[in-house]
Image (cartoon, rainbow, N blue to C red; front, side, top):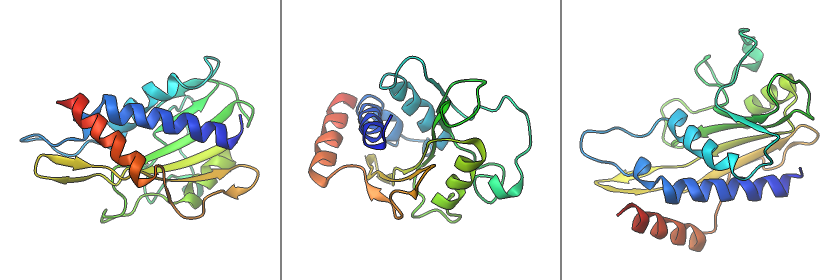
Length: 187
């Protein structure tokens, strides 16, 4: 699968996640922001619908049970691991490891920034994932209103960073249409 095709599929999956799961992002009384793991889980359901059935879509899959050396930990502590992967379970190499994804709720305002593309590339090289993607939703809440401005950054195993800096997933017009559709569906 080529990068442009995979990006289109991930954009579709993200759009479906935003529209169908909008209440996940919308604050309600007494609740906190959604976790990266929760968002990745929901995104995984929609990614599953966009890739061939031969691929497995998993969250934090680790059958080896091994501790990662510090050079390939996803972030400053072991708590940062890719929270979504597309692969063939139990098989090794780039032909069986398609994509690793790390989802951030809002890394632009976090006290401790999340992992960068270099960290993703270390894991990508270590385990032979063809593609790595960092997705920052840039979730902002004000009162009972939420907004997201998703940015992503991609790397390929062969060429390294394809987008050295995060880029917007949607144009402002498209994002506005998706957000309005999501709010209507959530009402």
